[in-house]
Length: 430
Ligand code: AFD
Ligand code: MN
Ligand code: MN
Image 1 (cartoon, rainbow, N blue to C red):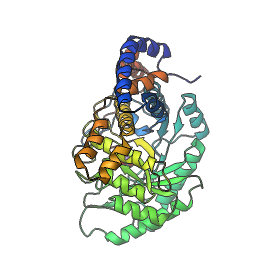
Image 2 (image 1 turned 135 degrees about the horizontal axis):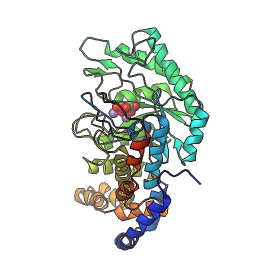
Image 3 (image 1 turned 180 degrees about the vertical axis):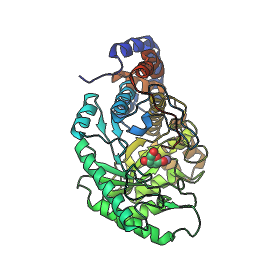
Image 4 (image 1 turned 60 degrees about the horizontal axis):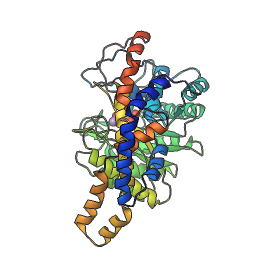
């Protein structure tokens, strides 16, 4: 029996009020899908097995470089973050793993931390290293670069930090390291664009050499910020070149917010899969740049199209296909628990819709160059309201049908506001 921060009785009681309506709605969806030759119950079982990890840093209020507005009762350490992640999984039943970030989540006893997560029914996902900011007492600064720094001792320090992250990861049961560096330049001429990439490759190879056999390393590209003229791993091209050079266990991670505006991300997904280098995702949504908004809140259609490529890849795998799915968002004005529940539902919904695409009909229309029929085949799946299916998946696993009402009825945040120490004001992108 797991430690349950939200009372299971409250969830059961709340579900009781929704049960009849859900039964009716699911029945209607089932009938509609049956007419299209789709067995809703089979889709339901797949959706129940589908999971996405949550970022430990997303459990707290994020901020911009202008301000951070703390939330009463938000977590201030990894223990409290785990407790909040347990709430997210308890109500939503889609997020059983937490991706930690070091040194933010450092503790003395990692075996104990693993047990603590397990007590909530949680496990750990990819570990994230941090060489994009300096820590108190750190010997070398990352102000002008980390893995790609011109200073040898700085590169060594960054390599050692990544290796330490792998060691921590082994203790907590993780199997992947995600490397995102803020390295780049702010003015033309600041660094040689070719040599900085060489230095990065050389240092990243030392990290790669320390990977256990059953681990993978994921390279996360990002076009700009904190470097505003050039970034060393700016795009999927640089990421793919590096992953191909580093080796088999190295793959690319696609953060949906890390591209130039209007880039066709679903096509990048297809290309990376073609190269056998699709490592994983950081889901979020964006309007203008790396906004880190809630998944599916701005462009749910793009999210669906990404999942359509993933469903295609799953049906026709080339080499390795086991992408790591994760949320990476910054919740500046909402309760992070609510944002992550909403996002996990949006993401799982796109996964479910992608399963509803009549793939045979789509391929046929594509072969025939029947443009409208191909488009309508996708559109029919996209326009299907899978809400009842997602709600049923939650309910059958002990989650909440109406997670928002149940969460608010639990007064969890208000209780934590009494127990937890307050977070200070401040600025900073996390
Ligand atoms: C960054 C990147 C990367 C990093 C995280 C830290 O997306 O995933 O680990 O945010 O907050 O923008
Ligand atoms: Mn990210
Ligand atoms: Mn980002």
